[in-house]
Length: 385
Image 1 (cartoon, rainbow, N blue to C red):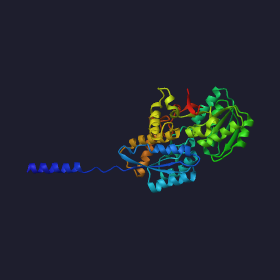
Image 2: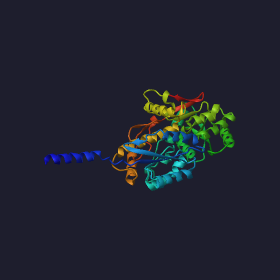
Image 3: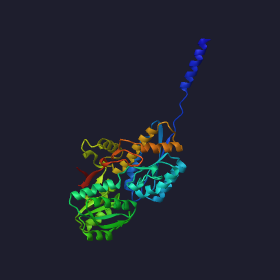
Image 4: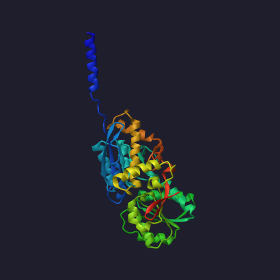
């Protein structure tokens, strides 16, 4: 009798062992990028990078739902709503530009869905209020880069500067932050001009800049539209130094700008000049890994800093998913809240641009290790130690 009971128990255990464990729920990630329109030179490498991201995180299959917002704020908002209502996403990555990302904040806050922006303005995550507590971002803040520019200007004896920037949140944010940095370095802004991303001419604005006779000009634009004022300045014979923001750090800008952008100075993430960084630089290893991964898929010289912002968003998501563990299941409000909390706890995550240390009051988490100064020479990017 004992033998029969033993055999029955063994059979029961075997049956349990053969019963498949319930599959863990998928993580759904909504991604909106500006793959067409004025910001396409930024959005395309971001879209390409999403395809290189892991399809599994901590035992969950990851589904990326990628939509193009065509560099348009209305489309970005519509994409965000679609992700939340139709795709039931756990997190949103995007958008590419500052105006689009700002427009999406109300949507993600209302639905309590975490969002990782790939746009630069500090206003996307500052201050961390009831709405922005759901929003994080990967690009360096404008003030960090503005200080790098102002410091370089001051070190080179520049006392006066003209400013021309986009007539939107990106340009306005840069004017505000550069104004602070310039004040700290006793640099006077002698002329201020605006232009639209879709403009085909800035002759009037450039004539006013040249008339003010500044020692340097800062162009606060992004992507290929940022080349327009620089080409116009060169046509008018302007011989002072020209600075750009980290919004131009891709090869499409070099292609469109051509000889007119030679000598340009700009701050950028270390990924732009990864191979030139000293071996002890904290992001060299991780930046080179991204460069090699992207170029293996898209060819030598194809990498850009904008794709790296998407890559870093993926690294932050991986760290957060691992931290959440089994405390909640994807597809639920509890999981979205847990993921938000986990993003806020991210520590010492080395990305392609810098080392991320988030906190309840800092939803960027980068420090000065996330910037270097770069010069355009012979159609390429040259690290300035």
